[in-house]
Image (tube, rainbow, N blue to C red):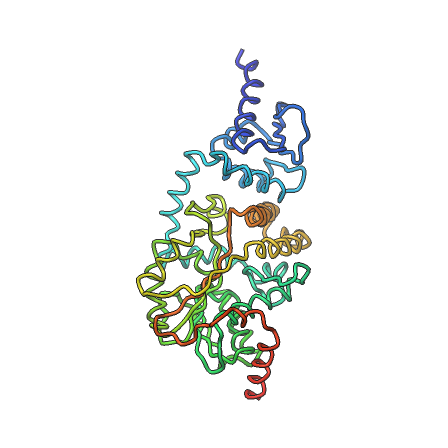
Length: 416
């Protein structure tokens, strides 16, 4: 009798999961029983679930189970994975996909992955200290691991990353001889770009040991070691006075409970006369970050709403001068990364195994969909102190190419 009830229970669970992800053209198939849902109609993507245990886990914790089960081969995807995530995320606003177990997991991760000085170092080590050789397989030649900027959608990734670095430098209107502090410098590309093309001196802070070693060697090889200092330390240890503060892709690793503390660090660095830029992944309203991404890819990560970021600025009376949202540029950046990642999948599997490849495929494909659909945003916020004298009159400096080239040429001539 119990065995006779199982097929109907299987179909009921499949139907519940399908309802939770919305009325999407996705077919769910349970491999060991042959049950499937929905019946009839066309499906753009088919998910084949290996067994009843995985089906039950998917019912209880859809997001976490999907990521884990796909990674270890218990769920197979037939069709375009990016499209799968687009379909689900587009319907998510009309459904309640996060069950109580997922919310409990998010609460537990918040406690376990707290971004204290010790916790931040542990969180960053899990992701950025994997291996520079791994990232070299799919990032651009300069090793820029943040959103690129595509003035033309057909631009190459190499050129778009250069355009991004130029874009943020123009926003701060950096001038030769100024000093800049950068919080979270990756493999050093932006710090070196600022020094070489804008004539500034840079102190760049980062707690990833692998990245700091690589950045210091690059500075030495490029003859910029006297203009750029790479410091292996937490952003909370920033000291000294500077003209400008720069942070590209670091705020996601701070956590909203530390935003006022970050603001105090910025004020200590640039006072009331400096200006700065925060470039970060965000959301339209406060929501928990993906529990699976935090569990498997980015420990301690959080994408804030814009109003949450005001906790960085308001206590110090910083004026927000400009906010730009370039989320579609991040979708395009990730498309390039995923394409390169797939071409290098065999090499990556030999380094870390096939489960790792599948997990990072979920991360990259899901991120593309999130930026396309708009569940994730990419904000660039420019701010300045009350006594800052470098506030632009218009935005012309961002888009008048010949004026920038003239300034750059004048700096290069004076430096030589």
